[in-house]
Length: 517
Ligand code: XMP
View 1: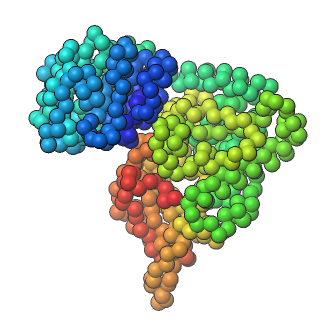
View 2 (view 1 turned 60 degrees about the vertical axis):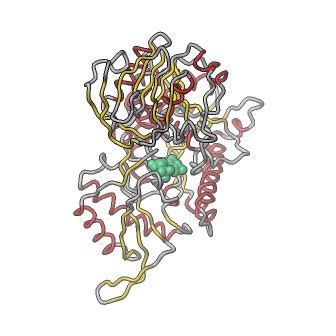
View 3 (view 1 turned 180 degrees about the vertical axis):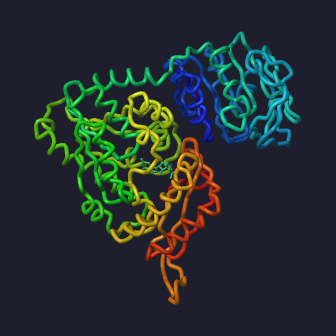
């Protein structure tokens, strides 16, 4: 286990993923975690992430120097690098010169950390302060025009650091730097593979569920499918899969899901709950309230399904839980819902924050420690069809969070039509893998004047939100080809009666999120 200490940038998750790509398991801890708590987990190494602060700023997140005396290998990046310099007796100065973005770095001596890297290459920088002197015992490995100490290592104490962000793709050879630290300096063993994950999880599920029964909420997406496939492997036909059609799915989706899943799972129970959900959502416009209601109705529906499927035998189990609910919760959901890194709650994901308190199930969440790309790899390992494993993400609350304003059946039908056109054209253009996802958002409370044929129209706009992303934590707006935009716009305004304007969202994440609610 490698611990990544999160100093408040969005980089910690990316670092954790990169560590795992180096086949070493990693988890994120908030920077307030005491050294004692970190050491209690017996980490093979500790990585200090970047962060937005200056080490000199009042209230800047600090680090207990006891960490450096513990004998655990430490790697610092950016802010973490400066904390190391400061904590170990080097010097950090506010030179007044900042470095942002792509920066050439020059290696003076490669040491172990930068072994076999080109002497000159480009890395991604983002800092104001600069390390001007390395702590005693450390050799300086590289510099830039304004940063005399851009990388250092002390092989004896198994510590190293770089001023740049090796975890981002813009840093050339970043992964190799990280691997040099993990494998060659810290001596971490490379045991994190998806084959091991499958075996371990199957074992864990058997242990947790025992002779109990489980019910799985299939959403149609890859996460719940992989979670269910793992559980099915562990407990066979004591798993029942339930798919809730909450009326906010996309066009043709329920039929598609039914066809796909009946191939893989022994039994699939499709519940038509459209009326129940839309009634509960009537009059609601506030996004968090919508999400909470949808999460709540989900659980209620499953409780009903459970009674239908298992009878009373399961709910009356005394003491120990005998009824389990399988969920495809991922590690980023856990971190982003405030469960992992002490970060602020940005949105309640319907499968984490929206759970009601009076839950009758024990949860089985076999993907809780995994990133999306790892889930896909597990899916492939389990032999799930490619169509399922590579499906673009679609949020649990569905189109309900893509209607800005109250969710009604008519509005859903309108959005469904527009969304189907947009998806069809994207597929035709061959962009499905390049584009991470493209929500279509209906601004149901906004109207604008248009003209069609000879008549004046007073309809609603939709927003196309095409993004590229690696993990949905950060995203960039996708530069769709003009012809594709044109085709989508023409078709939507011609074919969907209520819509007379198509706009495009050109905001990255951050500051925007991918979904509008
Ligand atoms: P945001 O809008 O937070 O979305 O940038 C990040 C990714 O998560 C998806 N998303 C959800 N998925 N339940 C889910 O299963 C949810 O409640 C939920 N909310 C957002 C979103 O589509 C994007 O891929």
